[in-house]
Length: 284
Image (cartoon, rainbow, N blue to C red; front, side):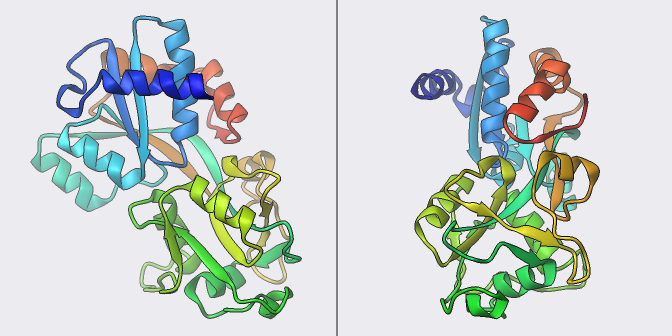
């Protein structure tokens, strides 16, 4: 792991934003924290096969990546949400033409501490918890403990997706928000760590971050529906109700090294990396 981080950081040091994309042998990719491990794995494998290429990968959230693409300070933005109309408008004002490429699928896992007896929730119960309407675990079959709500920060595509699809239930007129007491954490790993150490906590992140230190909740669309766990098969089949596509965005159709890298991500080998990092491939 240390070797990998040093290698990626060394590449990053070679690529200040001012020079991103000016060297045909280098790429700077920024964005989704959900996708950062996947993107780093792609970068490592690609650089192993192409020793003359340098690909730097940094996270910061989907919004950060798209902002960097719009400002011209990265070559590829990784995003766990679709680009917004206002971002497209701003990009065009700056002469940037965002081009969308779907590269994987992801299931959003809702997780609790393994000591928590609650193992399944409906979407309504989840919405109640994360908006603060349900504040004690005993209300959903757990212990008499105050619920500690964990969320990603607002620039996270994961935050946006969860709010739109769980809290607001895909209703564009809904104005539901996360409870004021929700703790906004900077990364999926930070949520994973907090859940691992806090028996009262609940959080969410891409299912690639699940470990034996957290327990993934089985989710049902309503009380009459089957409870479904976040697994690759359940996401691929469409049974798991909280799943989403993952994207790369470039300025116009990919060219040069950017095209070669994107082609690699969509290749059989690149999609095998998707599976190995616990996401769902868009190609087999």
